[in-house]
Image 1 (cartoon, rainbow, N blue to C red):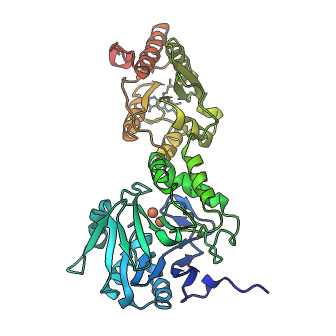
Image 2 (image 1 turned 90 degrees about the horizontal axis):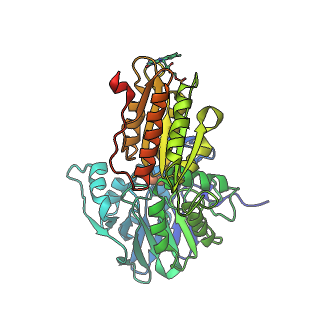
Image 3 (image 1 turned 90 degrees about the vertical axis):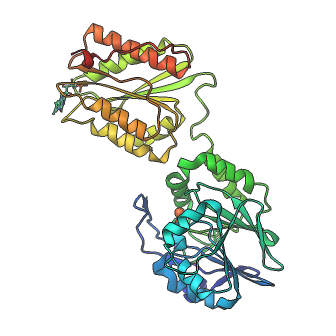
Length: 427
Ligand SMILES: Cc1cc2nc3c(=O)[nH]c(=O)nc-3n(C[C@H](O)[C@H](O)[C@H](O)COP(=O)(O)O)c2cc1C
Ligand SMILES: [Fe+2]
Ligand SMILES: [Fe+2]
């Protein structure tokens, strides 16, 4: 019979490379993480201990409620007096929870954090006269444990401003923080032993790293040249079998999510709408017709009634501009529009062009509400959206056409500043 996985034997560290130990904690029953993530397999909080000829380093800690596991595992391989170095790659409470107590127990240790972590450290630990000294580090800085060297890599915004990675040079182990991590609790610990965690790995990326794709690419540029024997993230399996596959996969995930661009020399404008009596739909068509007159713009029109939100997220990520049409129903835009707008938090929309339009009966709040939401998502809303009372007349459809054209001209940088009249303002 196979031996039970070593990590289940609580109180013991697991050495997975000479002098390199896992001292984390397993949280198999967790089902939701940080509100936004489902964790069907629970999670783990991975922390590490490295023993060098001149001292011991701890890289990351665990969530506060799992401190007991962490300290027991630490004590199984080192005494607190030996701890010279504490590295926090990321200060989110799932990794900094046991830090204050560790600082108390390890009086000889120096704390190393990224420069951006400083203000967070103060805000998280709110020291009341407690020992509170630290050294800030960036790419190229190192700390020596005698025969072992820890090198710091500045990899911010993955997924907080403070994040960094730490590289154990002599053994080629990358302590990557949340990068390359996933919520997948498995006491077998290593990627060549645990169950199939591919879904969890991609799911974690999609919800945690995806909004920061540009930062992922910058981090990969630093990580890819390293000699990598293992990647040791703060959640989920330790990647010791073919770690480069995960690096390559991150690059793939951070590149375009669609199969190629629709075109290299066109800007993409997507118009989404919803309509009960066809009024907003007619506006959408007129706006599309106007936009199509502008060369260099590819217009796509989608009725939200006929689609699911999820597949649109990829399209939106690749689009240069978005228009949303909604009637006003009970003083609000309609739910499918909000559903789509609220699922865009996983994207970086900064600087994309946005706009809104819609038919209404008497108060017509929807358009302005959508515009506000777009601004909240850091999109640029260059034109005041068009609102039409009930059924659009020919004259009003002509205004929609102009709105579409002006919006497309803005998108291609050709707009001279033509004014679009919101018919509701004239009423
Ligand atoms: C249940 C219901 C609630 C509505 N509430 C509002 C409202 O609060 N304010 C408003 O301006 N119009 C309201 N309207 C009017 C619609 O916005 C109007 O009929 C509009 O032309 C519908 O456009 P559509 O054909 O694109 O759906 C409401 C209509 C319905 C059926
Ligand atoms: Fe985190
Ligand atoms: Fe985390």
